[in-house]
Structure formats: structure tokens, C-alpha cells
Image (cartoon, rainbow, N blue to C red; front, top):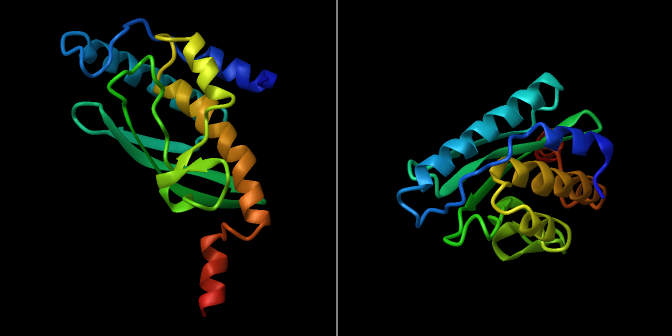
Length: 170
């Protein structure tokens, strides 16, 4: 289960009300507005807690999201591209978050760099449809995955900080 700090942070993310996906043309703009409001609130609370760790933007339709996320380990910042598409069955189906440059570096990842969220996050998402959205995906899906996987990948030498890469190259 999530620790108390995670529960407190997630409890401050607004729950979404509109039960609509990209196929529901009339309701999707309202859902997308709620998604943005929740994301803005989540980013604001992260910044207030000095825990800013991602940037996201979407295409005009709100169906393709890209950005960066980062993880600080031993005072070094490791930054990664992140991307996902909103599935046509959204919000019943959670988006599959991909971190392409880590593709094949961990067993907790699927082809294309999609992170494994099936064990812990998928059941939580299913219990909270349509209240959970992209901010919840980031908070309860990507953040814990990064916290577990990145230190392990660093310790195994599969992820090397860019400063160390430059030192080796010179």
C-alpha cells in the first residue's frame, strides 16, 4: 500500500467527474478541462513541496501526451522522455506510460518502453473510474515506478548520469 505522504499528496489531486473519452466528442472537452485542472493542481502542490519532477504537454486533441520526467538519486538528476496516448476506451482503460530510452533495461517494462503498471496500479485505476485521470497516473503510476526502478538501474549500470557519460567519453 501507499505510504502516508503519497496518500496525502494524492488526496489533494482533484477527482474528475466527467465520464468521457476521446470518442465522446460532446463530453471530451469537459473531461480534458478537468484533466488539465487536476494536473495543474498536482504540479502546484509538487512545487510547493519542492518535489517538481515532470513536465507534460498534449497535442491539441488531448490524445497524445509527451514530456519529461526526472529522478534525483545521490544528488544527481536523471532525466527521461515520457509519452503516452489516451486509449479509445479511456477512462475505463488507463494510458500506458512509456519511457522509451529505458526500453529493454528492466523486466518491469514492455516493448516500446511502456512501464509495467499491471500489478499495482491497474486494479487501483479500475476501482476509481472515472475519478482518476492523468495526474493520478503520474502520482500513483509513474512516480512509484521511477522510485523503484531508477535506483536499481543505476546500481546495475544500466542508467548512467550524463556527466559521468561525458567523463568516460573524454
